[in-house]
Length: 634
Image (cartoon, rainbow, N blue to C red; front, side):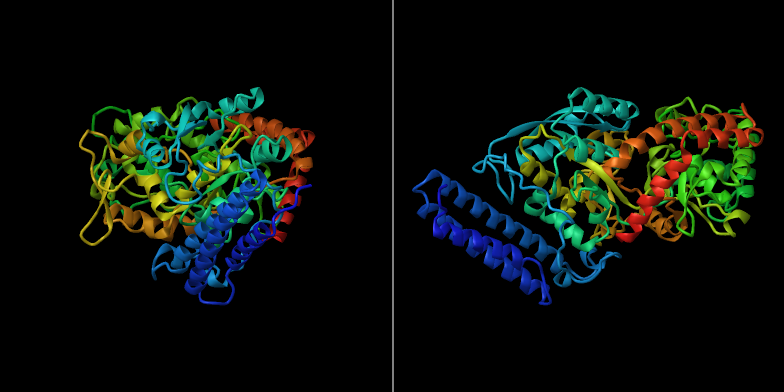
C-alpha cells in the first residue's frame, strides 16, 4: 500500500477543518461566514501547494487536486451561508415564516444516514465547483420529462437555451405529453430506456423507493448536495421542514424538490366575470360561500343566458376527471365540494385524533354523491367530465361557454389578457356547510413541497455537474428566471422597483408566452424555491389581490388529508398491490355513483364488503404505521 505524503495529509485535514467551521455556532453570522470563506481560501492555497509538492507520484497529485476541489467547494458553500446570513431585512431569507432562527444559530444536521462515498465521475479539469460555466467543455446528456399542453417544444424554450449557454450542459430531450407521461415513464423504467436525467418527472415517493432504495437505478444525492449545492443547503437552513420531507427510508435523498412560498393551497378557481355582469351580480359580494349558494348560481348560469347569444349552450361548471388511477381523487370536485361534507378526501385521510380512515366509508359520502349527481343530471356540471381533456376544457372556456372553472389565473383560460381586467374575475371562496361547523374548507393539494421534480439515474455520467445545474434554480435569481424568464422579456422593473408584466405583442396571453416561449415551469413541476418576496413583489393589482386571496382565503381553509409519506421497502410492494386494486375499484364505483348508473345508498354495504375483501383494513394499517412514524420524526 502506498503511503500518503505527510504534507498532503495536512492539507486534507485543513480542508476538513474548513468544513467543520461552516457549521455556524453562536457567533455573528456574517463574521462566521467571512471567517469560513477565509479559512477555505487558505485551505485551497495550501492544497495547491500540496499538489505541486506531491507531483512526484500520479496518485498523490490526483489526491491533492481532489483536496483543492473540496476546499473550493467549501468556499462555495460559505458564500451561500453569507448570502443567507447577510440578507437585507425584509428579504425572503430573513422573513420566511418557517425560519427557525438566524443562520448563525443553526447547526446543520445534514442527513440522518449519509450515503456511501460517490466517486466523482466528472473530469476534474473540466468541472468547476463554483461560477459559470459549470464545465469548460460542453457535455451532453439525455433528458426526459412531462410537457404540459401549453408549453412549446422544450428544445426551443429560452430556459433550456440560456441554461446551455450559461453552463455548457446540453441535452438530447424527449418531452412527453402530460396525459401519457405516467405510461411512458413506467415503460422507460421497465425497458431500461430511461434517460440520464428526469426533468419535470414527478418521480413520486413510491417510485423513489422502488427505483432508488430497491433497484438502485436512481442516484443518491446526499453527497452531491453537500458538496455542490450551496443554494439548496441555504434553503434547508431557512425551510427546516423540507429536508425531512424528501429523505427516503434509507436516509438518502433521490430527488430534487420544488418548494412553494406558502403551505398547501386549495386549487384556484374563477367565475366568469362577464356572466356575473350579465346577471347583475357583484364580483365581490355575490360570490357563493355555501353549497346552496353555489348550486343556485350554477342554476342561474344554466337558465338565464349569461353569455347572451340566445342559445341554451351554457356550461355552468366545466372540469374533467381523467382515466388515471389518481385522477378521481385529485379531481377538482373532490377538492372543493367533497370536503364541505366533512370528508377531507375520498380515499385515505387522518381524522382529528390521528386515526387513518377511508373517505368512501364516511357516513356523509352518500350526501356528497346526491349533491354532485344532481348537478350532473341537470347539466350544471359538464356531462363530458369523464371524456374530455384539458385542452377541450380550455377551448370551451375561451369560447365563453363556461361560468366556472379551475385555472391558476383567468388569463390561462378566459378570454382576457389585461391583468387589471383579470382582477375583476370573481375568485372562488372555499365553501362552508353544517358539516364543517360553518367553517370554510377545501382539500389542500399537498404542503407546498413537491418531491422528485428532477432525479438522476445510474446512466448519468456527470452527477456533480447536474447537481450544480439544478442547484442554481434554488437561488433567488434562478427561481425567478425559471418561472418568469429574463428581465425585459415578459417582465420589467417599475419605477417603484416592483415587477410588472410586459404584455406580449404577438397575440399570446402572458401564460401562453411564458409556457410557449420561455419555460417548462408553466403547467409542469420544476425544481425551485419560491420566495414570498418574489410572489408579492408585483406592481400588478391582480397579482397583489391573488396573493391576498391565498393568504386570507385559500391557505387558511385548506386541509391536508394525509401527509405524503415514504414507506419502508418491505411494505412498498404490498402497498402498491393493494392501492392498484382498491383505487381502480373506487374510481369505477365513484363514476357509477356520480353519473347515476348505480345507486350508492343501495350499493353501500356491498361496496364496503368488496373493499374489505380486497384488503382495505391492511391498507389502512400500513398507512397508520407510516403516519405514526412520520409524526414521531417531526
